[in-house]
Image (tube, rainbow, N blue to C red; front, side):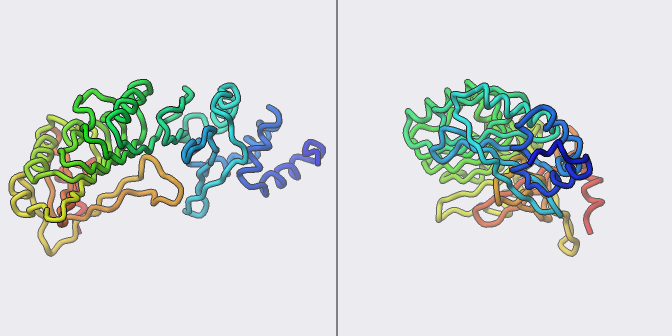
Amino acid sequence: MKLSKYPYVVQNEILHNMNYCNLFELSLVSKKMRKLVKSSQMNRLKNTVSVMYDCCYLLCRPLVYLQYKEDNRMFYSRIFFSIPLENTSTIEFIHNIFLYFFGNSVECYWKTDNYMLSIPRLENLSVCTSMQIRTNSDMATVDNFFSSHPVLKSIELGYWAKESLSPESESKLYQAESIRISQYDRKLPPILRNFQGKRTTLDCYLCEASDLIEFVNRWKSGEAYQKLEYLKIRILREEFGIPLDETLNSIGAQHIDATRKPPAHTLPKLFIEYAFEPMTNPITSHSYVVRESDNRVASVLIEGKTLSFGVWDKTEEEFLSMVD
């Protein structure tokens, strides 16, 4: 079937009934075809949320996925080609087609779990990693990986090594926008003191109430965590629970009347992977703290071994106006 033989209305109808995968593969045929796809399918293209190059699960060539919304639901469409990593010109060609369709309006991610593989330097491309660190030599290699790339969008680490994560606050590890770390040794994770990004979730064996109090007070004073939007800490020690009253008193928490309903703190996730929920877990708490420098509010929720901390882009007066 030669699409160009048909009138524009028919061409448009044919393209409209193609799935995302076939539509984008068709756009590889020629510049003329790409122009037709872009002009006729503009409304569909606007539903695209992200492009992901998935190079995980021992893959040495990325699989390409498009994430898009339809009827308020999120879908993924696999584009049925994979590209050898050494073929950088083909990867760049494919990426430039995505830039032609979306410009900088759509997030493009490179997802990897192998710090030995190279990552191409492409415009508007964010890097997300998921890694297991089991030995000290692994940690040294991972540090080199972080230092040799631009600041990462998202990092997920399972940490089993005896040597602690890098204590150096300038490490690019702590500059990532979003970090999730599971640390199973008995040392206090340095991320709690050094994190400079927006979101972090931390599962750790050792974290005393005094460490949590120091964290909140440093945020309140404006000394650190200026970009922080969301933090969740879960302590793995079976015998440990976060002392509720002691911690809230030590951070100078203020309280919403128990008869009223506080607002729920949620944020769109910075990186949405496959079936994961697109929003952070809601934080609904009657306790909050206020940052001295700009009067911004953070909700503080302590439940057993877990502390959740959600920063609002609102002053105390604006925050309290949302209370039912």
